[in-house]
Image (cartoon, rainbow, N blue to C red):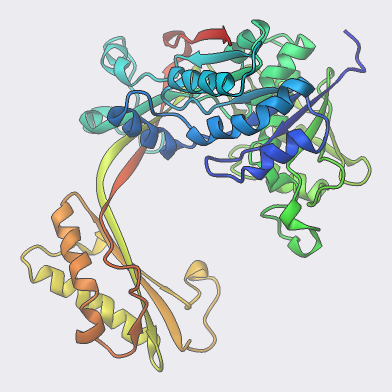
Amino acid sequence: MSQDKTVLIANGQGFWGDSLLGPLRLVEEGPLDYLTLDYLAEVTMSIMQKQKLRNPSAGYATDFVEMLRQILPTCQKKGIKVIANAGGVNPKGCLEAIQAVVKELGMTGIKIGIVEGDDILDQLPELMASGEKFKNLDNGEAVDTILDKMSSANVYIGAKPIVDALAQGADIVVTGRSTDPSLVVAPLIYEFGWSMDDFDKLAAGTVMGHILECGAQCTGGNYNDWRNVPNFARIGYPVVEAKADGTFVVTKHEGTGGLVNIDTVTSQLMYELGDPVNYLGPDCTSDFTTIKLEQDGENRVRVSGVKGSAPTPTYKVSMSYEDGYKIVGQLTYTGPDAIEKANLGAEILFERVGMYGKPIPEEDRFIELFGTNVCYKGIVKQDQPPSEVMLRVGAKSHDKNLLNILARELAPLITSGPVGVTGFAAGRPRPTEIVGYWPALIDKTKVSTRVLVEEV
């Protein structure tokens, strides 16, 4: 294989709900070999699991399927392959929906691959009987305490099964809960023939995936020097020019807005980073302290020097469980002494709830006064008292009826509390479910992935 070969990889979604303009513009405004899309977060899996319980054909990112409807003709014309973790808890349902769209478009010769095996919710009793403890990584608690409330359990799988799907000719690959960087590592392994033991190159691919995974955050989005970012409205989503030796250039399509420099790339590299020497993933362990960044022209940053080592013998498992309910409402207090009046309003509210026979404990109450530097509490002081503040008040409880009482007593503060209240146009708030997060580990030998590729 020629060392001069360049593979162009872009990421058009940083989360479920990111702008559809990202993928649409990426495939239209410049050359591309692979388009990756990251849809999943920890809470997303629980939401999708509940969707699937209500409707067995649901449980995947429907936005992805509708987006494909718009970009597939261009992708087929340009030879762009699509890789996404949009399958959620139902990759097979996503496959069927994509097949329907391809047929509706009158297209043929499209191979769609899915990766299954990350969803272990139904296997938990069997896995625990085999010795898996699933202790909480944050506090060491035993999973038995919430096992009956568990709503989802998904393993963060790696790049290998995605590579297998590509090797079978897949034009579109859909996974469940794969890690974000693995969506990018997979096409590099496939295109360059990297070994799964070449940890320096796998680490380079992981760093590449980490830079790309949040979309426009590495091209000027969410960036401190925001005044110097041109044309935010047409911000270019990131494109990487990858080489077989593990070096790559981060850039964006010509003529797009945004900014790519060492600072924008560094900002994303530091995002959600734990131990920089041991960035753990299913494919390898990456040392972020070895990364070398060089400006390689306008809106071009060259990345090299990345070192890696073997991965751990375990996968991370993202588990979620039902943890009661929460409720949040808001009122705006105006005029002189707005802060004092808002604090009194909250005090009155919780005292009245207690008058129904069951008070809400202090530790389960939520009170914030926006306009008092609440986002910087304890850091930035308020110089002068504001003439208006927004009171956000709420609580959490396993008793849904108790929270409904709080909701009913919020509006009466307007006529039976301190003067100067407004802002209740949104109506009475409603309790919503709290999704608890339970991170754990599982022996890699206990997880089996499955690849299915079908042609339309």
